Image 1 (spheres, rainbow, N blue to C red):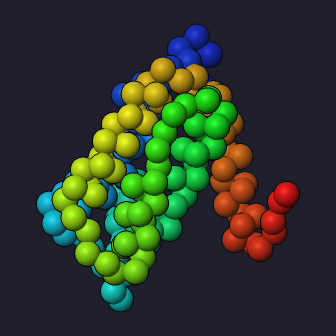
Image 2: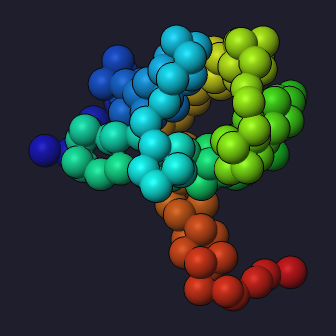
Length: 142
């Protein structure tokens, strides 16, 4: 069944799908732990039963929100998220303050997301997925 075009703002389910993984990841970091496989920080995404590399997932999340911010002309400072991804990638200790700043960023993105047109955001997500695939293939755009 297709979603009615009458309701264009995100539902509770949309919010859970969009932010569930990053919320769970940051919640574990707030508690002071995270899963790892062969020394690499990972998180388990139950909906697709897959383990994901946290730094790569955060980089994708950051790239998407950078795209959304540019498209919607939002003021978002994503640098603390970039720092967190880099620290996790290099195995550098993370402070509670760093995690708290990232939680604040996610909270800000949720506020913006609740007011957005889900069909417009869906298009931006698809564009970002295409960009991710092109990057994985080594294709660059100018």
